Image 1 (cartoon, rainbow over the protein chains, first blue to last red):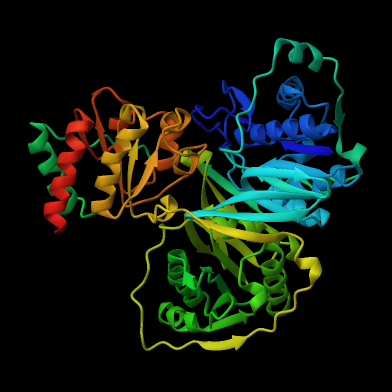
Image 2: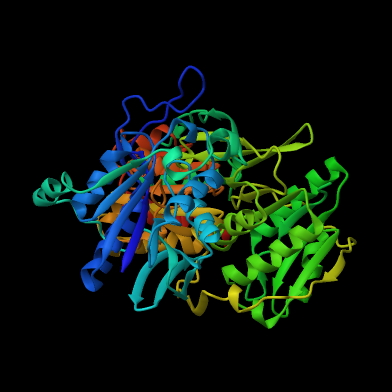
Length: 260
Length: 328
């Protein structure tokens, strides 16, 4: 099995978001992690490889420091990594991101492509699906259970109030949801080995895409501005004995907040 | 020229999603401002009867693709039918609910027809003839305002529970157009083998109007029973913080937060939840937040509209009794 995992480096979940002076999202002082959903994808790929043999290749688009995230996946056990990094990619959207990934992955050998079902930063849950469409592959989205056998994949996909069991022929794109597995920590041995594993860096020129096709100039959707939510104000603390406080709360929800 | 506002009339088992009525209500306003028509797009098997439920909320026309091959949702068949319709009619905008189906379908359709998509939007504004969308990012820790300046249709998935449903007008009629369904084997690569329903029968978190949520302060899985009892009285969904999920007390699909679900209920009752930033991100767009926690310093009190400092094991059952009396 040749498995490709698409991975994005994101802000830590505990990160506080601030804007720069020119209104962009500031990354100053923010610690970075592998997008948690992509980490489930890495773990699943490793488990499949352990069962069936093969190779796990991690592909990422990002700045230079996204190498750290790829190295971590290599330390977990992935075989090699590819980072596509280029200033011309700035300001892109899900369409341009999928364009770049499809260009690179389209030239690779694969049986299965695993991705997180969404990134916790932009939260758009689009890139994997767009990639599947560009490569002409079926998709099983938001899976909490996956069985891979020769030639096909069966995924349990989360829907409102239940799940769907979907079968697709390989190659296919599968996106991981929390609950699929517990990602392993890299071992010391893994970390040592990761240093020697191949991590290839590619520029736009290397992959044969024009700058006009990607980044802000290729994007279908543009961001006009970023803003922060108005801080919620602390409300009323209801004092008194428990029974009294409960009664008062119910009254306030009915009469003041009018939500009951 | 691209014309018309389209809404995806998502149904499962012959039942329309609540978000469909929200999309029609909002879509009607935009269509009126633009002097354009509002169309609903309905796919499924034996779903024609649903048309009369769509018309009162403002649909001028309903395109119905009724075919046994569309009985169960599948990405391939639904994408094919909808993309063909978009190419034929060239709508200006197309809205879908940000549901499991909408999230699976919308990016595929957008990619096939070569357009952009703004996901999980909570605001729409018409500015100089184009649509601007507001979308929470970082689970609501920030917002991005997006526009799709050139590609058409302008596509967006809209978060459920954000737009109000307008008063239905029973006198409104919609023109019904039956759409021939042309799907082939190439559209059926991924097949739905089975749909498994959960037994709980409780309203889904992302659609719930009221959510009762528990965190580390619940101390164990068995104690969620008291939240279930409160939720039963209120017709609420039961959520959990990451701490409670990671401890194995609740399944991950009930997690509210940045690595769980982002929710926008009218009322969010947080019990034994300290208010970690990743949890607050997922629920801070709730209209009213209630916090019950022993620790008066807990972060949750900084965002709560009403708070009770105290023992949830004492207070929650008392609340249940009070609501019972009120709602009896």
